[in-house]
Length: 61
Figure 1 (tube, rainbow, N blue to C red):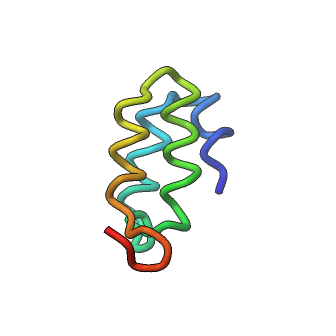
Figure 2 (spheres, one colour; figure 1 turned 90 degrees about the vertical axis):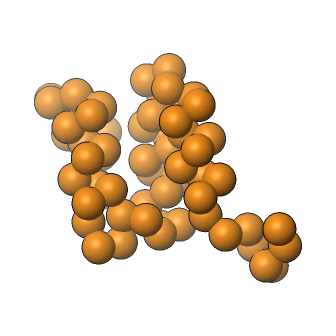
């Protein structure tokens, strides 16, 4: 993903919005980079929320 490049040029919100809107934007593939970008910009609560929406490995609650 090019999120860091987009964020550097246009801002975090402008990078995260299209990533979330992408057909795979709500998958674990996208969750990690989105959460990393949010956490790196000081938005840790949002980053945690993104990760919590993903199913846990092994199917454990």
